[in-house]
Image 1 (cartoon, one colour):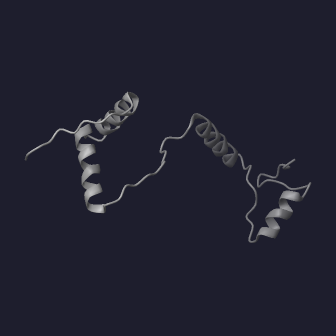
Image 2 (tube, rainbow, N blue to C red; image 1 turned 90 degrees about the vertical axis):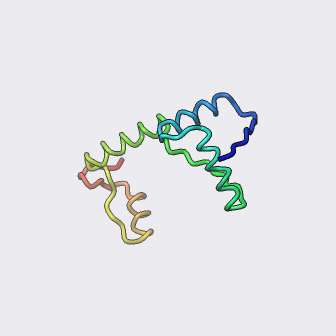
Image 3 (cartoon, rainbow, N blue to C red; image 1 turned 45 degrees about the vertical axis):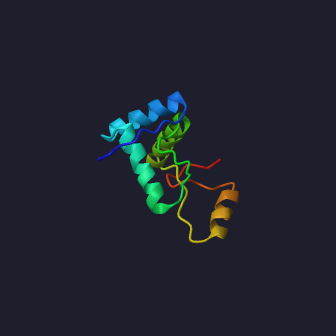
Length: 103
């Protein structure tokens, strides 16, 4: 297979992060770039997305807390319509499924 060298500028941190993620997938940076170039040729389009697969530290803490709350029964009852859910939220005597008061 004939090859051509392509040079382009990118942020050094981006390069390191891409190399690390590619390595974790068993790929080289060249393989990743070739995949994107071939996809560009076949799809004739460029896709932009801002998908973040890693949770932020705050999201991790909130997820952990919500899991604790759920196990402890701090969850609302099930509602079959919006009106009932709003009424429960407005009720000063509303209780969680574990019987404890919301307020």
